[in-house]
Length: 420
Length: 110
Image 1: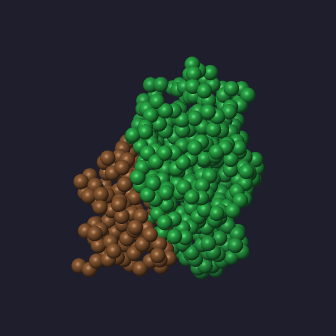
Image 2: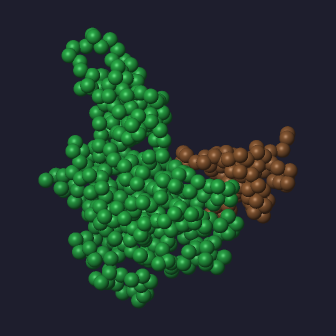
Image 3: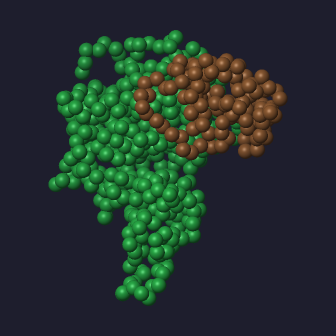
């Protein structure tokens, strides 16, 4: 496929390349018009964000009956209220009072998300009350209304389901697929992974000046790593010619995964690590020692990579779930806020630290994560700005960037499908 | 002023008022507001002590650290953040981060 003479480190599909293993992807240059066009952004609202299942949180965020959080999904024009009912079930509603349309749950700023616990929801405006299952239970001066039946005026429900502790919503009137069907067999292979034991969380948020897909793109290929993140290797042992070859790529419906493998960082000679990594036994790829989190399903490493490092699952449309062989995970969400901007959310989940040493290991991982994510975030404003010149509209992608190719094709397919 | 750190770590006391900070947001702000001379001074004094500091903290349960020990752990957290600037980037700000920000909004304490 190219003139390189470097032998591949990892076995490839029979076709010789990952991309050609999925012939519907083609191998030609791609357009990123979908990241700059205001018209396309308008189409994405309905075609993607009002049709796909969207992850909005974890069950641990709703520990008991009455626990709730709100979720603003600007691209779908929705404010959601996600709550655990008295029966323990998690439900989602539009965060809108049925009386005069006031936002039901909010604190100081109606655009800001909020969370807490309560026995019922009371509208600030006229005091209408709703129970934890969304039923309208109290109307002030009910007798003054005309033909008001409280049973018809419960909070407007939103389809909500839970997969391995991850709470998903679907804003479609009637979802075309159940959550399980939507996630498909590859993500189903993660069933039983002990996410519920990785409850020590570090959460991050950022507003970023790039289209939501551009940030996702930066995290679904490793081709950029030697160039944008040279500091991941200490300068004394840095090889400017070094490339990065991933061990396994796989597409399943609208979803994708890339796995890495190879010698673990801490098994390399000491000069390949920074002093702080050696001192804390943690660093770029997290803690060196994996906690005992019990058995993990084979599906976390769908390519059977050995030695396996990371599997980076891209859950369509806007979630990345990155699982480390050392028993912790990262979750990213990209929420569009305009054609050229999005809100980025990141969570790191670890087994709760039992000692100060373990807490410091997690701190190092969280600190290193931020440094290198800032490099991605910083650069993408430049990508957005240059793409918006629209001087160019076709860009070559290599085999290591197959998931970028797949992502933009799926987005285009969903938009085209919704337009039919 | 009374000491913030355990007596065994009185050599780090000059840095305690500056770097015993509870949250990453405070530590990040302090790193950005510091000169490389200041970051080096802290790093050079504290890095050789990190093993001893972690061992000292680990004589206590993580959820029941006495105040001075909790300060010591906060100092270790700061050292981790400062090590990025000293060992990796040779400047307080992440190289090539342009105008990007990333706010840690939830974390375990301490």
